[in-house]
Image (cartoon, rainbow, N blue to C red; front, side, top):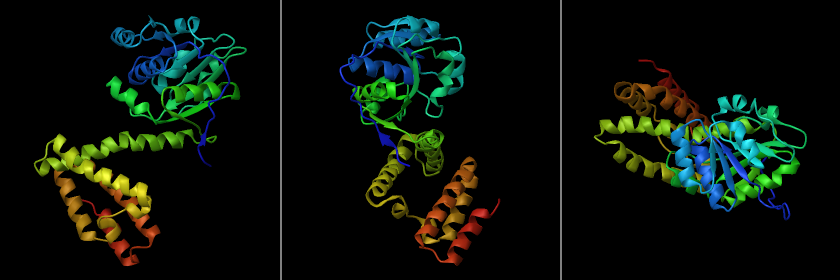
Length: 302
């Protein structure tokens, strides 16, 4: 099944007043982006005083509250932007009014986690921008431009959410049923997984006299070239290196260096190498004996 784009045309209905619950990196960036898009962000709830103050300084006209339930009285669209594990507790004591909509920004949870807040004539959904949000608000807001935004909800609100996604510069898509966890796992590998990989690369770069900035500059360029190759010729065809060549001796040398200099990265290297070996096997580029030598090298302990 494929991700489906969503039509944002919903007629002449005006933009609703928006409230944000949670003033972390995601909530703050979304509040700024939505406000700059011309939609009225009128309420914020956060129990962190410093975050409330920051949000208010960035979003003109917003009223800040400590308790999330206060937002319900101020807006038509509520955006719950708190950590996944906190969503259920946040919405448990909240009840929407008829005509209101509540969405969350979790990449893995479905809209049903918001069910306790439902009332007659209200709606729930999800709105997940595929963006690497950080404490740098301007960088995060800029990252929304062109980003995929996965939306979920009943037909009555999909047009609204698609319109909001496009207003802030994103590309709204609707995921196939049951695909959200896999979609989000891939996102985590592409973002947090990349940082884990970079951390291991920096550890090894230190042995060559490179500081973090130098290692990221040198190996980051190689990563960018590899990504460009994958876009141009496909993922499997872009694979290069000792695994696809069957150089078991090189793999053994790598593992020996990792055990001495970055032991925490050994399993990461092995996991990636095994995946590369599967790709090489699918490509048919290695003889069976070459594959077995590489597998043996990866299986060695100590």
